[in-house]
Length: 194
Image (cartoon, rainbow, N blue to C red; front, top):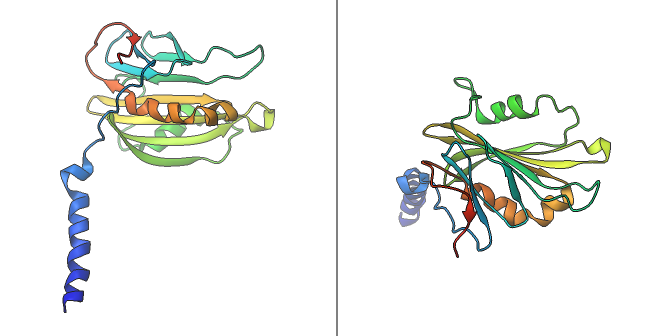
């Protein structure tokens, strides 16, 4: 009899816990690592923290950044982020993965396997899409796209680069979306305080 009771109660408690506000809460933003730079879009409302080897070169509206090219002809990692006020938003009822496909990948004929998953970021719930481009050309690039839903719309982040570079910088690149912030402007770009 006790065994049957436990078989009913334990799954019920787990199901209720999964529906609790704590289970649906967004994760806490991790601290910005020492040596990283906080970059803000000139329009305000969008901030990124970037590792030392990725440098912002344009912050008008969106944030564009990349590694300094390591050598002539070499490939490098680059990224672009747009805040939730961007003009192109998903159509009513359109899923985030479909919007990413339509807006960013519909003109890419040479694509590798694509994976998607929902990710809970401090800035909002996001759809992460990973794929590869241009493998047949000998200049393959791995691409990670994020569509991040917030109270003021959907924001976007793309990080792409050569496979070796993306793999060797994976820990830093995985942290960037967790440090992305929306909200009122704070001021100019600056090194993170330690």
